[in-house]
Structure formats: structure tokens, C-alpha cells
Image (cartoon, rainbow, N blue to C red):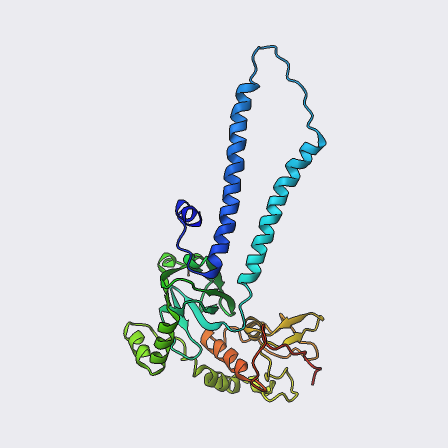
Length: 349
Ligand code: CUA
């Protein structure tokens, strides 16, 4: 049934864990609307014949529907709408909540190509290789305009924005190669802004990563013409540390937990931070990037707002490197519970 409907509706293969549920909701909505509109059409044609005007002077009777009938016509469609909304909202929450053990991949969009980088290398890849059956989190950004990262076979679509990070995740379920498109009109070659995701059996992927760590695959991919426009991410922490000094971050932020002008970077990543207006925010990649680009957006309680904006001063790779450096600053390496460790921000300096 699932496969039949998928073919009738010309949908791409279902190659991620989320895609089946999304398609089932799609089928539910489309079958209900086809059924109801067909019944309504047949009834309309029947009524046209059955209640047609037979004489010129035939009076039109005044009809008033009973209350229960009118209520039914409101409540039944509304219930279907709310049920679909409930299912869809559950799927949305699921799709925007990456599991804690997901493998990270950095995705950079620029006119007009997609580039991929693993935190421990290699980077600048045009084809993203991922293992089957394991969660993969994508951290997306753009070097110029807004792009949309779109993988039809995964039913996955997430915009990539210049100057900040967005995230999404998936579990690939079928080995194969799947096309990636750009879903935001971004210039003359928008329609040619394509990439591919290659889903490998988990064992093959691990073997490839081992091989790549010994340098061979990196050379092969570079030989295929991938420009190295992001630093290798094992070097990203080191680059981030250098940038933190050269850009003046460490004049205000300590990295050892000691009080300073700004919040310490030690254990900052995934800490729950209280803002000046009393709300709390989880310090994830998106928050850290936003705080660099627009420090006024989320001001931390107990600290003066003296930080300048780094928008335009730091490119996407530099920003990613600083985020990776902050992520590397952990007081102790303990296994993170689901959702990561949560700390309360304690006081100001
Ligand atoms: Cu990038 Cu359209």
C-alpha cells in the first residue's frame, strides 16, 4: 500500500527513518481529501439532476438545516485538521531535535555549491558520505545568501543562512546515492546548485573513515577537484584557539571558569544560560554563532553588554572554528546524558 501510493504520487524513494512517517501523513491527508471531494462532487451532480427546476414558476423552498448537521459540518473537518496538525507537529519536533549521539557534519552553501566537512576531517567534500542506520546532525551555514538544503529522498529541507548556524538531522536507512538540491532561489545558477549524499553500510563507512584518517581518501577527494575552503576540522579547534586570541575574545572571556568581563567559555557549550530578560536559552551552535554576530540579540544576565558584533569580521569557517574551540572546553569529560549536560549559569563576575 505504502509503495503503491508512493509510485502513484511520484514520490522519491524513502531513504531516511523520518520519511516513512512523513509520507504516511501525506497519504492520510491526500486520501481523505480525494475521498471527501469525490463524494462532494458526486452528490453535487446528483443534486443538480434531482432538484433541477422543472417548471418556470416552480417556487424555491426555504430550507433550514438542523443545528446538529451544521455542527457536524464544522466539527468533523476541524477534527481532521487538528489530528493532522497534531501528527505533523510531533514529526516537526522530532525532526528539529537531534539525538545527543548524532555524528556532526558541517554543511556550507555558497553560490552555487554545497560543501561538507567532518569535525575531524576531511573537509571541502562535494559528496557527503554517511553511515546507514546512525543519526547524522547537519550544522548548516552559508557564505553568501540564503540557500535551502533539500534532500527529497530523506524528506529533509533546512535553510542555510549567512552568519549563523541552523541544524537538522536524519538517519539514513537505505544504502545508495541521493541527490541534494537548493530550495531557495539564490541566483543565476540556483538550479545547478546540487550535491549528493552517499549512504554506505555502517561497516564500509567505518572502513572508509579509517582509510581517510590515514590520508588516502582525503587525497582522492582533493584529486577529484574539491576545493579546500574550510580548514580541516581536527585543526579547527587549534584555529579557533588562535582566533580567540587574535580577535580579542580572550580579553573578556576566560577559558578556565574564572570570572571575567564576559561569561566563561569553560563548559559553555550546551549550558542553559539565563538572559537579562529572565528567559533561558541552551548554548548550542546556533546560539554561540548568533552571540558572535549579534550580541544584543540574547544578552546574558549579570554581564555588561560590551561585546562588539563580529558580523562581517569573521567568515563562516572562522566562526565554525571558534564554535568548535568553545565546544572543546570541558571541565571534565563525562558521558553526556540525553540532550547533553545542563548547567545553571551561576551569577556574574
Ligand atoms: Cu542556493 Cu538556490
